[in-house]
Amino acid sequence: MLDTLRLTLGDYEISGDANLDVHRETVNTATGEVRGRYPLFRRGSGFIEGKKAVHNADDWNFTLEPHGPIGSQILVPQVSFSVPKLANGSNFEPADFKTTKAGLKILQRELALVGVKTNINTATISRLDSCKSVRTVERFEAYAPVLARLQGKRMAQRGYGSSFLWLNGLQQISAYDKYEEMKQKKKNLSRVPRNCVRFEHRMLKPRKVRDVLGFGNVTDLIAGFEQVGIAYRAAMENHLFRHSPIDVPVLAVDDIMESLKVFQRAGNRYYVADFLTAYAILQLGDHKANFLAAVEGTSANRATHNRLRKMLEKMEMNSLSLQLVMPSKHTQGELYGELKREVLAA
Image 1 (tube, rainbow, N blue to C red):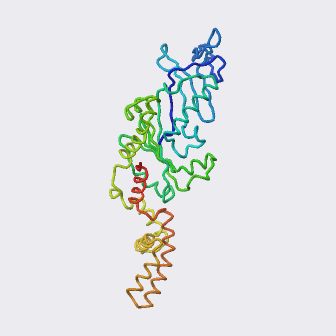
Image 2 (tube, rainbow, N blue to C red):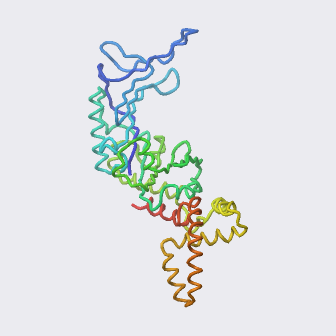
């Protein structure tokens, strides 16, 4: 379930020849006032000074900068990284217990190589993201109307087309098209299913991590790793999937109106009847042949059979138009139930 960690290092030492980029102080050209000059780490008998020091590796980012009120700042060393990406080269599948231990070991070794020595087990967790990639029956577009109607408790919602975000100051929940995200980043898609929705829970503050997981450092994370999955499922159920599928509207008003307009623009004054017929055919899906066989079994009139076949052929074209505005043949309740079942599965 684990994806991203931001750790604040506990015991650490930065060597004088560390491979860090130092951001220099700023100077006001009018007044000559210098801002952001802090002793960052020791070199020889003096200090390397600047606003902050960073190292941006391929799979992790280290930052050393002062935090706190002016005059009483303390240096805070932090490192952010995707655990599965560092350990396995990809973050498509979240990190399990074994992958997490391996990723932390790699991180400690790579930090030492750039001159930052630390015992990673003493680090505190200042942010923790957990996730699950759900292989879905339909494309992401079919689930978008369902996701757009979900409301997280005491969370604002933002929609961006191929992604949705529920957030407050302490946490975020995100749902997005994982295939499209990796495609835009030009990642290897050979092992990524085309229909895949990613659900992420992001605890943004140390206090939130402690309140939810009951611990706040790496040692306890390893000892109580199962709590990450428990907390993820609890957050998803509490905020997004607390309803029963039967509570979700079968068809939303906006969807129906948009669909009716398709038939209204065709100029037929019986557009409502055409919509209802097309919708019925759309629901039949791959069972139209069975429907015809059933009709033939209840009526021996060949003329009735022929009229029905011609009507189905005509209305099948209308049902194709209907699919343009209703991308799924499943109801929103069914799609919601599918997502709920897959996301909350252990």
